[in-house]
Image (tube, rainbow, N blue to C red; front, side, top):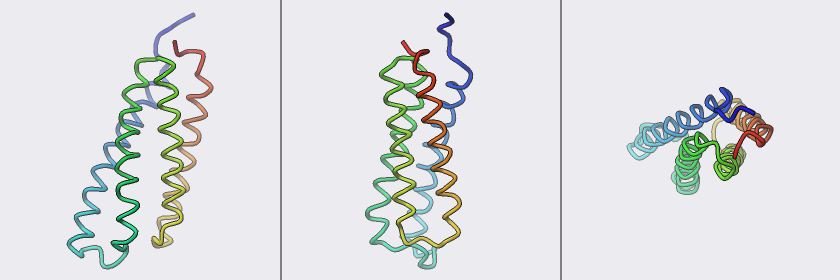
Length: 129
């Protein structure tokens, strides 16, 4: 049996790393816009005090999970699966936030992508050592 990294696992790892770093960068930009009142009141400070730390933690965790999954160890697969579940949870929590309705398709798309990715990692369980 081949113990190399399947291309799907590599793609999942890259997507997790890049999306986590991109999310961190975007959170920094959006937080700066919000504190400078550039956003025009589209988010409130009350919601950002809860959602920003959650989003920062999940984004950083997702990037670390992407890096760890490249080791092809079972503990890394469990960690990646937990990171993807946390990403789905983050999107569900964001759906509860008082954001404008135009963000709804983005959050639903995020939920779908992370759910499918978590299912893929679960189906690749036997390839991890």
